[in-house]
Image (cartoon, rainbow, N blue to C red; front, side):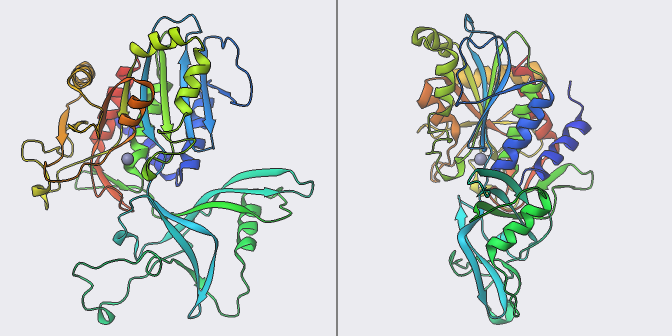
Length: 426
Ligand SMILES: [Zn+2]
């Protein structure tokens, strides 16, 4: 049993301490390690892995964690999938520019970000860096400035009377965060990184260029909103709520089952990468666990994947954007997602199985299908199903303002998702 208050407090802390996919994966790894899961390294051999609890990281941004009954296992896997990345602003390799006495950092847009809400917000910076020391050895570290260091100010209404009408945003010229005054400042971006590295890791001494993957993020922590604090608002609810729920399930998994979670990076940019759902990560791990193809196929045919990624709740101001027979309400439980064209992998069999689990867990459940005249999003479910042929259901908590810098969901839906996934792994 997972108490509601503990669940929410832990979720908020996970969201706040995971500004990037790298941080989310590191936090997941730390939670698993604390509970006795052993990290496996892909560069090493794992012959006849004994029964136990394990996890693997790839690129520091995707993670597979599992309980394992040993190679003679006859049972399949219970799997949960989710993604660690979220849309945002990624700092360019040589980003620093000085314009009109302002210091700015050039960015690329990562994924399908809803851009308007990024204006006039306190932004912080986080990500991963690599550097070499005086002996040419490479090191890496996670950076997080943990304070507001940037802002993208709007143009005043007086200078743009059309601002409240539909306005195009130019991603090269409009989305450039200010990080301070230029004055006679001789700031160089590499120096800035060195200073932050020193603040976080005083013993690190980089000897040359620092390569970086840094993202701006909302410096305001997630918070509870509503007369009864029944809503949660914050960045990256898509899809860290699902990552968190998957982790809770694995941390409490039954010891005599093969339970596996896969948290993929790069979902927001199409999943085609060495660590994305379209890449070989999961297949590689399964092949190592069950090298005999017959045994692997047998296990996979009796396995089941719950792919968890947020769904669109019906918005009270825009209800017409939904099919009137399928209106996922905030607070009414996880949503099963359907799409005739396989943008979601759900079929009647997998939906029925998830519905059964919800009944068992005492959790309400709803359905989503796009309006027939609107395009449908997709997620890791169909890609994983196509990659390893596993029966899959696509589900997720209903949420508003998906891909905004602050998204909104109902607290109780986060708890419901945790409880049904916990039930799946027990
Ligand atoms: Zn998502």
